Length: 509
Image 1 (cartoon, one colour):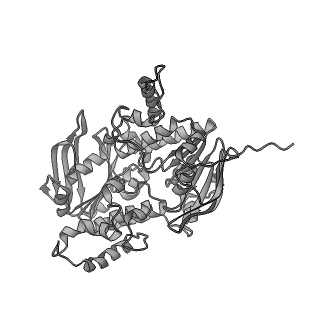
Image 2 (spheres, one colour; image 1 turned 120 degrees about the horizontal axis):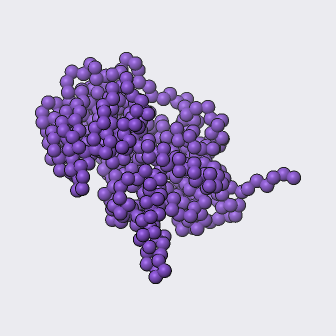
Image 3 (tube, helix red, strand yellow; image 1 turned 180 degrees about the vertical axis):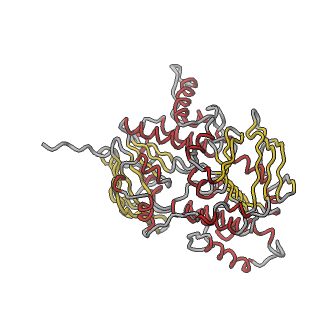
């Protein structure tokens, strides 16, 4: 007698959906079994998030069927999906900034005491338990609005994990996490799989796919290209080639480039004894370093180590009381606004591109021009058509995929939005480029293009400071890396000493 094969926990057949007449998904099949991790990969805009939003009840498909444990299901709302045992961790965070981490985790599903009141003690204990597993170090009673993007990401993950879900869909769950936090999440993912949960992992970090996934489905231009066991995938490069439909050449750094800083003629940035005081403690304490012309200098560390805070202090947008000194091109500077910093030749690509990097409703052209306008001859009286050519040239140089420069920025995929942001700052011809998580949530092909932008800028003499949670990114791009731990400088590593294990060791308390 043949063994009975159990039905998938969730199974989609022939799903299609269009927006404004444009097909986003076309007849896509997808399923996940109990006790497996099924990875979903593709370029930004391939349709991954749209597929997951249909399975999570946010979108209604134009055609196709969804079955949950073999039974046809109509997932017309998020509550329908939750009732079906499907929890979704969305790439775009869905948190209430004015509530604490605990309250966000249990929002709408608070445990109750016998008298019917929210059981605050039980909530704190449960929240602390799951947050500890994820490496979240802040107080769970902290308001979410005061947390960094990576810390918010952990709260979003915890919010889904406390639900009694049979299927967990994770859309770029590690995009804002360091390698240590990512390792904790992947370890937890393996434990959840062992408990029989079905997990869908959407990730641009292909190392995660090979580390934990059993099967992988590749989407390209809204169509399913292939589904196969991960063990049958030859390499990450082969997987990317499937995603983009052509051979992929990963970016490399030539031996003749390392280290670029040796030929530099001057110090562009010098930080001495920088201390930044938060409400209860020092966010950064007694940090010193210097960066040379044409050098790519990395800042590494866990969440809350102070990487972002250092960049914000250099650019003059820090929210903290400041001690120590910052010199730019040999002159001590204390910028009072982004305008002053930009006028001095600095550019800052922030971590949260949607909040701080773009005016999403405005056109690509407007976003490209925005930081350059004060330096346009005759501003504010200028001829827009004179700038149009410069913008078109920068869009091509930055490889921003677009239909028209008049289309709004929010119509671009995440990777193209990020290329736009970096491109608009390069239009200002900066001498110093500050980058905070420059490839967060960006697909592998777009990431390679961003790396080339950064390396080309350094070759042209631009000084680059990059804060990143990705060790591979830092070791590829940087001449030296400063490792921060709980706000303190542990060591500056030269390129000859780069090691993933050493970076993790130095970053750990």
